[in-house]
Length: 264
Image 1 (cartoon, rainbow, N blue to C red):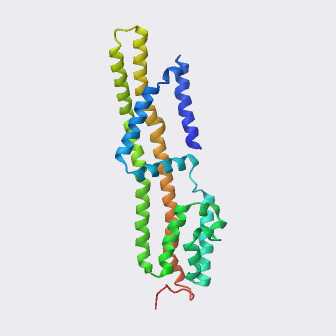
Image 2: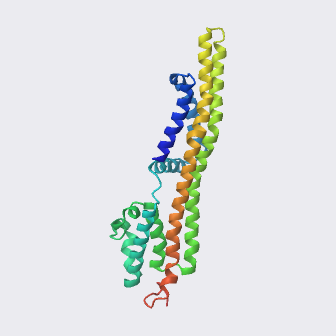
Image 3: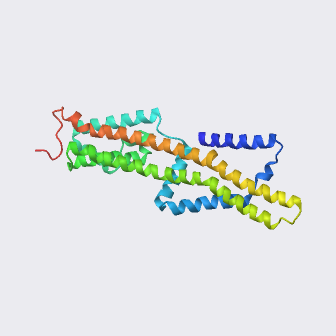
């Protein structure tokens, strides 16, 4: 929501200042210039990034428009879900967690907390951390390294779309210059025409430069920064889950009920 408000403020400020100076907004509507700039930027992104990164970027843009879900309430629900889950394992043994880990969609614990159950990445990360404990396939000291590797992979997965969008945003002024040069070429081909026609072509060329700079610094770069903040928030949320799962064996080892699966 804040992204939309910010975009409205940028647009209103630019258009308002232009109108106050005596300009007419209709003069800024140059579809051909926009096609050159937007099409070139899209083609550059398709060239520089794999398909998965492009789709991840679109998902992150949509998530940014919705707003970051990692609020204080989301953390409170996470802690409640983890508490119920871990207490169940402590009372009934780790095997009691198997149905929740193998089928999180049907878990009565996860479904009690909407912000947790709707976050499929977090649920998947939690279950992937608990599954080796239940199966007894890793030792407690190995669990931390495994989860750190997964966190690093998540960070890289979040960073790649931001990097692609940032590079595309940085290239927008250059694509604006390309559109302007094409406009000047058209102007030079009409140099013998009426002065009004020449002025129209020059104005259209300048709009290309204007659009490239505005799209870069007014919209795409701020959007990339917002995506970066959202990615950092999701990683912090995942690190909270990782810290809870990694500390689980140490905490339960003090209880007479606890024994690491597979231990003698």
